[in-house]
Amino acid sequence: MQGWYKKPLAYNDSLPILLPNVAEPIDTTFNWFVNQDDYYIIRQVDASCSKCIGQMEVAQAFLEKHSEVKNLHFIMIVNAVIPDMAQEAIDKLQLDFPVLFQRNHEQFRRMNQLPINDDLFTNVLVNGRGEIILFGDALFNELTEELFLSIAKGECGV
Image (cartoon, rainbow, N blue to C red):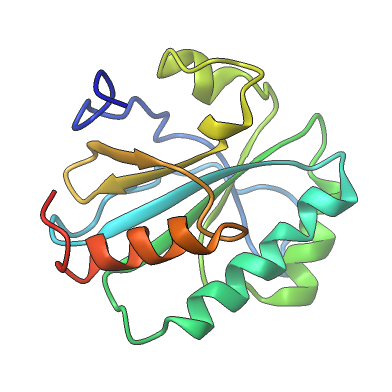
């Protein structure tokens, strides 16, 4: 982690956005980081895997469970050749976070020089200045969840 801490995150601000009840991804410029005091959990999901698509519902439940932490947000990046499975989940769940669509599942990882096949790098906590703070899975690991929350609440100096 030492080499990644506060490293600027490379991202594509023109990834299409998937919206509830809109058939095709919308091409637009996405403002990734709105407030410098906020934190963002960025999670990559494989849209060809129904279990992985189910993680959107888990992320929604996570945000609802921790709704008092107003400065912690999700950005989901869905990797797929076509967005159909992801779109079905988004339509059903009416998600409270942006879902970005990329056809090349390695694009985000390559831009950030992350290992391609290491699940540790599927989730990243980023501060509002776009700097990498921590890798880990806050959805399925209670200790990581507590750590991400304490960072967002300012209880853990980073």
